[in-house]
Length: 84
Image 1 (cartoon, rainbow, N blue to C red):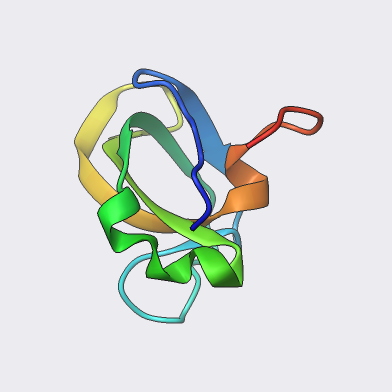
Image 2 (image 1 turned 90 degrees about the vertical axis):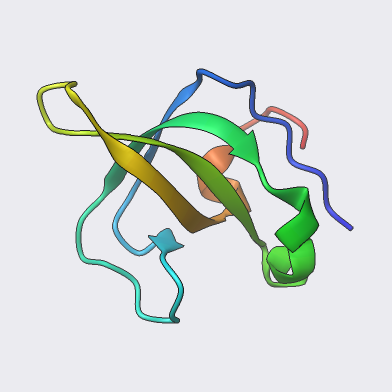
């Protein structure tokens, strides 16, 4: 099992193609999210280099939107050079 550590409150920008919701279709838009938690209980996707995260969506102007759960590529969550 791969454990990904992202502190609650961290703002992450997931580029288009680096995240999805529920299906294998990846949205064409990026996602800016304030991470609440990494959902390791749903970690069955870690073998594919993905993990589920939950947080609050931010719009382009930084306003808070709704709560979202997204399956994100691990390499998009972890800044380069930071160990997972």
